[in-house]
Amino acid sequence: DTAVSQTPKYLVTQMGNDKSIKCEQNLGHDTMYWYKQDSKKFLKIMFSYNNKELIINETVPNRFSPKSPDKAHLNLHINSLELGDSAVYFCASSQLGMGKETQYFGPGTRLLVL
Amino acid sequence: GQQVMQIPQYQHVQEGEDFTTYCNSSTTLSNIQWYKQRPGGHPVFLIQLVKSGEVKKQKRLTFQFGEAKKNSSLHITATQTTDVGTYFCAGRGNQFYFGTGTSLTVIP
Image 1 (spheres, each protein chain N blue to C red):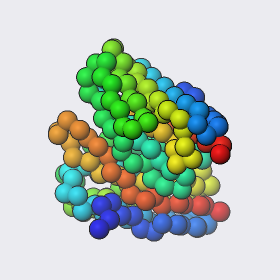
Image 2 (tube, each protein chain N blue to C red; image 1 turned 90 degrees about the horizontal axis):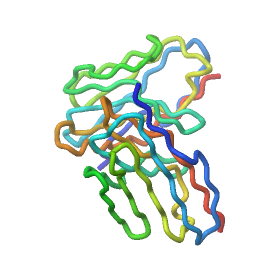
Image 3 (cartoon, chains in turn yellow, brown; image 1 turned 90 degrees about the vertical axis):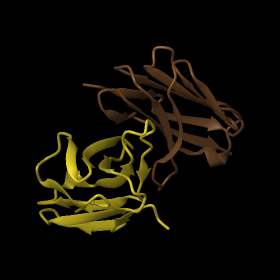
């Protein structure tokens, strides 16, 4: 059973398009995250949701809009895609307040904007 | 704002040599975690350290948390080709942040 799953795994699209990435976790965690990893491997947190409420919203263009329909899902919608959005996007989940906060990552979505 | 830097950014070693990556935070951390990301893969949790000065070992890997809880290190003894990947530290100061990562290449 996959703990954190993301779809799609690969996404190739034209500049200006709108696209969505979906994430689901079956670990029963209360917190989910979106990270962006660039070509230099830097992992930059974008958003975090705890029990469907937004708790972290780093400086991210407002073309990026997360949506959490329930605790097990966190989707990312991107409007008007730009070349600089090309990266690997990772979803992750954790259980806050347990003193451990281990992050479990999905396999990533490789986005290429042409 | 809080920053977590790792050095070196890249390291190439011959198989059998030792390797160390250092993690430095601008703020005191309540805990430090280490993750490994294989090429083409996703970060996977390795270990967490909580106490000041704590040292933990996992086979050839030794993890240390500094006395001031602002730095940490990961040391690999006698590297193998299976150690290839990017190693990230991560910790909670005012927020939970990942370090900048160290990409390790092991030359057979």
